[in-house]
Length: 190
Image 1 (cartoon, rainbow, N blue to C red):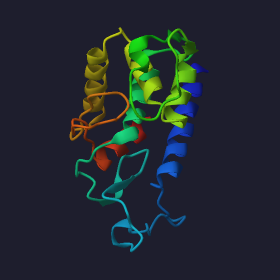
Image 2 (image 1 turned 30 degrees about the horizontal axis):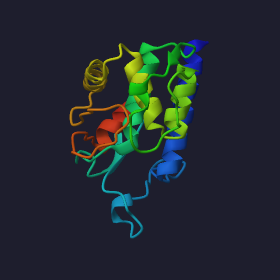
Image 3 (image 1 turned 30 degrees about the vertical axis):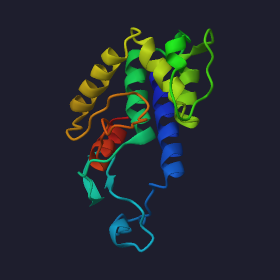
Image 4 (image 1 turned 90 degrees about the horizontal axis):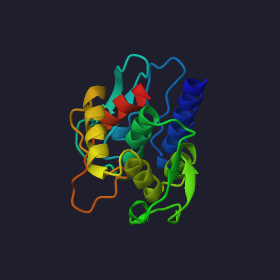
């Protein structure tokens, strides 16, 4: 039951993100023709990939192996790692270090006590950088250890051209990078 709940949570959140980020592509029901995003006059994507979720076969790509700053899609890998490390009903007591982050937040306050599940919702649906940081620091109160796990997990998935230095993707020094192909692999594993 817990596994089914996790799978639903992952699929639900990924679907919301795809719709929000406008990464969905149209395909005919026979999957013979996929809209070529790369040649569309309305294309604003720098890169993309369409993969068969079961076989990981690339059906279409447009600069899929070009590294880019990942921004909040970093949270997909954070979600994946958290679902492996924690139980959804684990509780996290929010510390001062967990709320010391810029960008989008869910406005956690020191002393709050939230379940991992609630923090995951805050991270994925509200893009809460504070929620992502709280989840990372929940591991052993050491961000570097969590980042080692994130990058090791990325390598195990096959993400060869990606690197993460924080759990939320906020990056002012170009230290995070990811490719569309690598993110496609992550989504297939989720």
